Length: 111
Image (cartoon, rainbow, N blue to C red; front, side, top):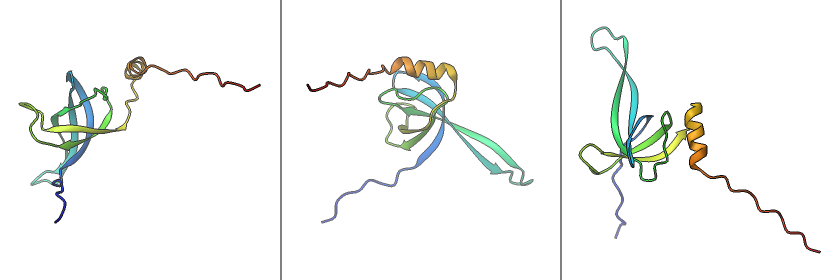
């Protein structure tokens, strides 16, 4: 008997463009397509609502998302991982404030 496997779900990479609420973000996915008649490359983008369970993402982060069952009226994707962190100074300060630094305990010396 074979083990059940998940369907191959679509994964996309985009940028966090908005933090809409608790556990929710908007991700912008840029892509390019040629014009049907003139063949000039046109920049386009899709904006999707994504479920971020632990509120790990910040504005400007490049993230990988995966298609999933409908989680709410608009959310059809969930956050997988952060590909690259945002280079924005304000976001870096917010990220540092959110994660407390743990000081290393002094090493005990044996006498």
